[in-house]
Length: 277
Ligand SMILES: NC(=O)c1ccc[n+]([C@@H]2O[C@H](COP(=O)([O-])OP(=O)(O)OC[C@H]3O[C@@H](n4cnc5c(N)ncnc54)[C@H](OP(=O)(O)O)[C@@H]3O)[C@@H](O)[C@H]2O)c1
Image (cartoon, rainbow, N blue to C red):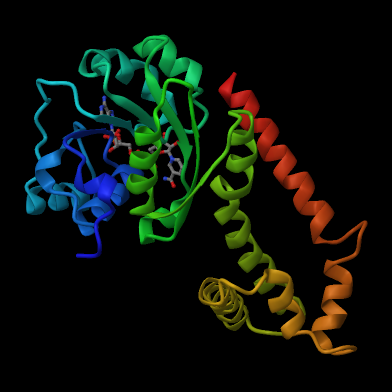
């Protein structure tokens, strides 16, 4: 058990609605961080087998609570959320923080459901949360208190890092950078492997090289957290060397990675706005 954040230590009750990949990863992180199993109720008709095993092993209740919890965390798929909200609206009390990880569902949607005075925090985690290395972007409505923010921070730090923005509109940019971002990196592995095959390598060798390179570079970034990505890049780039030759292509102002990534992120942010309606 690691050090438990004070906000988690004093958390009396949390209801987790939807305990699949994201909910299960968070539950695992909270229990690892020392949150007592008795503080959590899970509402999910069919959690995945490994999450069900965790719930049973830890002794987490799957009964519907009879009193309003301090936190009502919603982690169901966006497509079914509206229907699910109808079944849990009565669970929330005036002290309940409505905490959502549901992509594309705005704070106004929760205020419409739980009342204009409801305390709402909307968040966008990403998939590395499953290994405790996620990053979650958060925004709070005006009814949410400092204590609500601290609670959110502690709950989401159990699966990685947390950043806050002031404007809900910035959630679309967070979705486009870190929410969808892991897929861009996975695609980079595919592209690097494909380029390796074009340079003469067997496919499985190229894939192993590309994958291990991204894993290792990610770990270097993680471990050397006080060194900027630009400096790490410069550290492995000798003037006129092989890396420099590739970076001249990748860093071309017009056709390099930066303008391509700007277009990709802008397309994702646009789609995020469309999905939020
Ligand atoms: N996975 C990620 O990395 C990620 C990243 C950012 C945000 N999110 C957000 O996290 C939310 C959950 O995503 P996920 O990947 O964890 O989905 P998921 O694995 O499908 O988990 C959702 C869980 O909710 C359950 N469920 C279905 N109906 C329910 C009901 N009426 N009441 C309570 N639970 C119910 C599902 O059961 P069934 O499987 O039987 O339907 C499933 O176990 C989504 O809104 C997504 O936008 C996920």
